[in-house]
Image 1 (cartoon, rainbow, N blue to C red):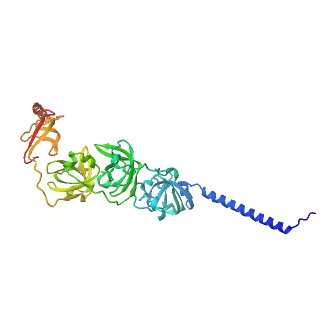
Image 2: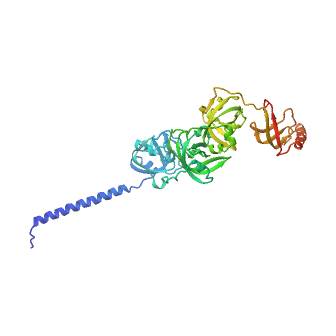
Image 3: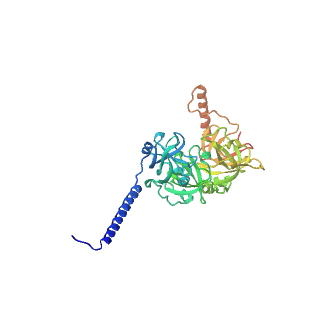
Length: 443
């Protein structure tokens, strides 16, 4: 038998080693547990709906907002930031496959759909408690909300000025500015409105407004899209998710005061296209019915320079206009082949307290013949007193029908053609003429 001196000391050493080992093993176990928790994989929305209760980390696409049991709003605008609806597909519409998520106040500025409508279609990971919400399985008591990495919006291209963007036709650009009109007032049911910075203005257009947040006057926005033109108007067509709302209720740019003559007969019109302008004009004629969602009202200045006032139905302005009156108009300088002023709301019309005399039309005007229509009507290349159509006083010839349907039509066609043929021996396209107009330009 062998005896070891210092046995008590040895036992103490062994005891310390044993305790240290147990502590080490416990720490290792805890670290593994923490790491396992950190690496917890999210479950799908359908899995969460089947689980019904308990803690869950859920991943899904933002598809809309719950508004009542089994009813979801799936397109902007949204009325609040209180919840977001998730699904396993960004195109899901069935309530049976949608999970409403209650958004606590700490996450509303980032994940509320009223503030962030462009989150639609983005993948979100949420940690919370599964329980009854909107009379179905929902996620409440939220602890974390994150955009999934592979769907985070990439950094936007550095914005350029609107003036520079206008010159980059068919290129993709990013611009930033203030919305100058509610799209619901001037868009005609589409995404069509205008934005402006200190260098210029431009039309924002898309035929699919449901893909974008509704734009309202005073919004500070960033737009990424392609520069195009339509009927002479320069536009930016936003990419999918290409509109970001930075702020709302911002001050609008001050309208540029101008005249019809300056806008239609100088380069100033090109410089101010898409921007807010103000001018004084006389309402020459108001049509009885709209065309293409709005009224084409003719306004003129004291020298009979003419411009169209494009009054959209949704503005409610047409009932406040009176023929034969002078107004100060504020609106956006738009274009449909030629320039037109686009008022946005009733306050854009101000009836002048002192009404000048109506513009006098009597006089002689130079013109160039574009074509002979029939025996009593010609068209000019450029308008005189706002029209290119000239009819002769005290001359009334038969009409020229293209598709006569009876004997009377045949007579009209035969004698109308004779009258037209005769006038063509007198006037030809390109002839310079003088148009003499009496005290009443139009009968």
